[in-house]
Image: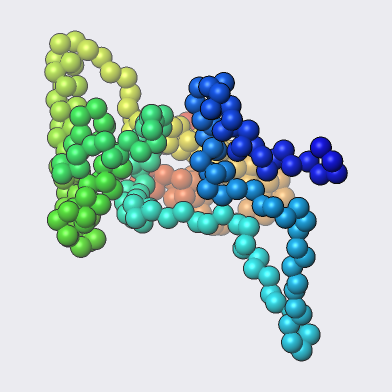
Length: 246
């Protein structure tokens, strides 16, 4: 071989010989590339001469040279605007598993409803983008049109859901408490606990004043409790607030 190993420079020649002898059934993927751009003949690397800038100034290095570029898509702004106006759409269950990652292009967005896809915020975004691209509508006009179509279908779904529930209840079905009923029960429970705690605090304050002998001629405890705790319905006070004056 000698002092230097030239095997890397002769790789194309060796592969071509194997092809001619039919020892290789197909040419490698790099065969044409190496033939077009052969390896360099110079075995040493030339030293790049870097001239110092005049007056001792150094060239400022780009801090973002090795940072990946920011990817932006036209639908990002439309998607951000829709979910800013409709934040509760993000709370709806959604399937995030996709086959190709670009399933939106497989639908016909000349209409907002698609076969095999549930209506959601992404439908409005793709519908708006289609209107801007094909019907040449402005951004606000396309957004209003897609949004109204979305609202119309949502109303139809709500009406159908409500009618289905009424029909099921007519045939004897029973549904549990909804989120509004559960929330009201929790709120009433917290309110009753606070009334009980406030009554106990009033009793403690009264006993403290009685023990120190500093009871003045101000409003009585019962009047004070009625004014603070149950101004709206004083007749429905619990037994803990039935404090006698004296």
